[in-house]
Image 1 (cartoon, rainbow, N blue to C red):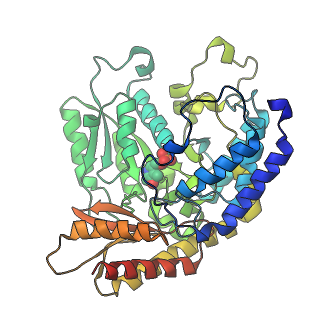
Image 2: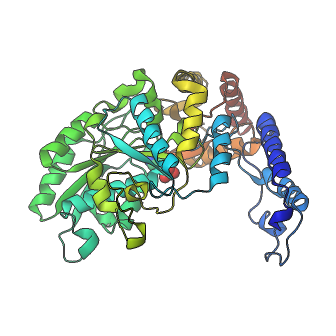
Length: 472
Ligand SMILES: *Cc1c(COP(=O)(O)O)cnc(C)c1O
């Protein structure tokens, strides 16, 4: 029962546990070798009728959970894109949980709302976008992108879609390269626009695989002639599979000629834009109508923290604001209510962790981490490219590249590389994921864990080459 719960004691205990966990995390296998169902078997089938002592609960936590987790804060996590939780930001998360505030309206969380406005603006300046961009912290890039696609939809329908529905309207079309993230496809489903109306434009050559601008123009023209309504373009910078990056300025220029909305998905690569030398990758970003980047991927802010920036908040808010009587904040007009910028009504206090993190580390420290990740990853790509049996499949884009191991004994190379990535992950020293690139199975490598060191990349080289040789 809560009045008997010694919150102070157990909070300290949890803090100690977390510090010990993070200090020794490098000694763990990055990905557990746990069989499906093994955890569920250890959990009771029903909730207890009466409460149990926290000591028992904590003991079960220690016995059941950590060894069956994939350790995303491990310095040798090189899979997917990293999900970072810098210790300074973890502290803010604890405090935000203590408030457990719903940051939906200014009046339900004045400090959270005003801090969010400031932190959005700090990050906007850090990535060098113009002051007209305003934004909010959403839970995920998937949600930010959904809001952008809903905004495209409403603009194209003269803001009648929410009221009238989509029936009997000419289909709206959205354009993206074939190398964008699946969250775009999903947003098309949820927005009621349909997969078939996401027009995938072919891409040019590597290393950036940009959307073909002439093909985009032609697709828009054909669609108009066929009675469709072009509504928006999704621009990709740093795609998930091989870092595909569109030519932002060129695509935005076409969008302006055509009068259609643009959303720039830089969920991963956007964090690197705090470094001036990487900004060429999204040159022209200031021309986009909407931009998403995830501080929870590469800036050390724990999930969930996706920065959604828009050049004109008016169209977003007109799309997303719904105000039943009990949510109206009479007399407070002109004040930002962030629930009107997103799907969620109740929202976490996300700005606190950004504030702690940016102040404790400072931008220069964060830039140096990202620069190191990029140069260490590129060094590994070079080392692998001159190692017998290895070939680079996609050249590095920032800290992401892909490779494969080639044997000439007639083995199926796709299967061989799947076996290799599984064997590497079972080895435990590092964790990688595979992708399919131009019909070939390749192994992705991405550096970006907050506290990783160069020696972690050296260990990756050893693990990859040793395991490959053991497979022959
Ligand atoms: C990770 C990623 C996403 C999805 O991000 P969530 O926050 O998990 O929804 C979308 N686009 C790109 C390019 C990504 O790298």
